Length: 314
Image 1 (spheres, rainbow, N blue to C red):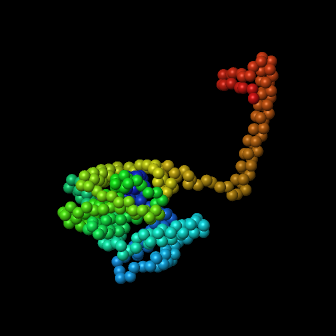
Image 2 (tube, rainbow, N blue to C red):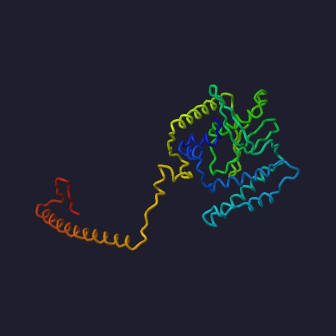
């Protein structure tokens, strides 16, 4: 099996979404958050692209401006706010991460992480935003994030994505493992200007490999049984397949609208009939209420009981 990390993570979160996206291959428009992130990633690639001339801050900001798509936003105000955020992110990043500080080895490079299950070799694939070589001689994987929240260090230390990236880099340069040179893995949170770094031990990688094996076997079983369960999770509100999901599709169910005179007249007739029935019932209820009230006065009671319930004086 050849499977991307994103597909593996999608299945782990919701098998039905995995089916829609990777089995049925149902195409959906990109969400504005994804387009926002892609634009920043592209700008950062241009900034760190090895060359004789380092792009100026003005050139990077112009790239953002020239490629900004205001149409994906609800209105001009939302677009303006998002654009201002993008500009601020890039200005802050440029000030803190001038390209000459880094020895960039690769940008947006594809990788394969081999997973052996019995006689079968499976490949987890993906793309790494950036790989640097640090002054200490370490290889550092850097993945940019545009999310508003930052995880804890403990979460970064257990992050599956970074572990898979580690396996991918080790597979690309086998000498790193032979020489026992550690690989640094980092998440750079662009909105906060913070980089959270971690490393993986041999034991960590064994555990990740076992987890990947279980995930691949579970996916194979789901494919054979054609059984992909919908699994509600915190990211459901941003899912592009809500219209197809049994937990959300009712929200998008089309309601019949009445546009012709015949439909309107029928509704008016039904309304009038029901209104007359309600009026008659209200009159009868008033009579019953008055009679019961007289009985309560006569007997000095505030509540009367019947076979189907009771009535309290109001």
